[in-house]
Length: 431
Ligand SMILES: O=P(O)(O)OC[C@H]1O[C@H](O)[C@H](O)[C@@H](O)[C@@H]1O
Image (cartoon, rainbow, N blue to C red):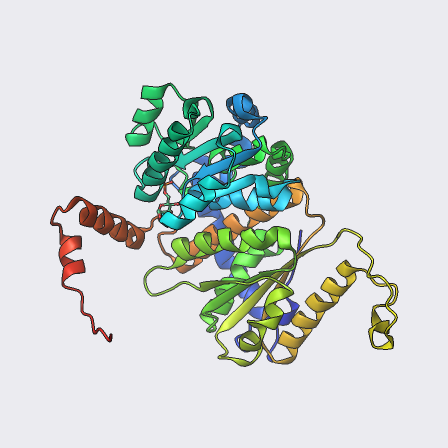
């Protein structure tokens, strides 16, 4: 994995950083690395996530999924960190990614349609909740279970659960004697992709989860006291420096359909970890080249408060563009679709640079298991580093928990501080 920050450097970029800024920042990176390394060593909450490549046991995951490894589909019931990592990995690496279906939202129409469209007798259920208490996940699981029962399918034979040792989900596991995989200790959900939280569907869909962990391990080995030695730290340091200069938005734009969900996974990681104390970049999700025809106008010519992160693999499938009888299409002659996509990528980076807008390029040697493992780990390391540099609590999410308590209170009818705030919220309605 390589990082090219050329288009974010120099006096011309707005916001921009120069090489001297990065040299200066490197002292803070060294201090942050010391904290991170000590946190990893002691298995402290949050920092422990960066030990997952070594600690996750892929054999245990493979054993747990054995009873359902021939299923035609995997239905993940989970939300946030309990869904996005798994979806990112299957979307990037499974040969048939559509065999992995996610139920995270509690939109009733969506769940009805999803369940109607699946052969339930041949669909494994992967229920994931670190806390075991998340309302969306539990409600969806109860609905799914009932649908299997209505269809005369024994859901207990098809279910794998990843959750902690206590809580309502753990009780269901006990009651129905379901296979349970543990959530790793000291790891917030959004940092748990490289554990059973994220690896059950990939294991069922034949992804090389061992290779994924090896790639992540290589990235872990590369962490050191200088931003110039590790792409993950380099990315974090550049984002931090750009945020200090006014880049309030980080638009993540992979030029690979298989990485579309990566931008979604990154959005949670970045937003929940770093959106605190009036700080944090707003992650925007984009896809190249599709969003060149949608969002790029704003990134190039809108407010100078953004950076764009483009991601691409160096190897692409070879699909020739056939010759056409029209002279006006002769510029395609001999080219393939990958060349066209790469040309669009280069044009985007150059056009941003030309307008003085910073772009950071992440290039993967290959979009294979090792490459994706390295990418996910690097982004987690970047996030932890930014949290240290900004001196914030990277591993908590108090603002999200307020909403969870309020929703639970509203459903149960119990009056709490949160439900009172909901009832008294200012509103101005126009019918
Ligand atoms: O895994 P769970 O405990 O069900 O949590 C699922 C999600 O819930 C909340 O929204 C948290 O803010 C997320 O960080 C978490 O990923």
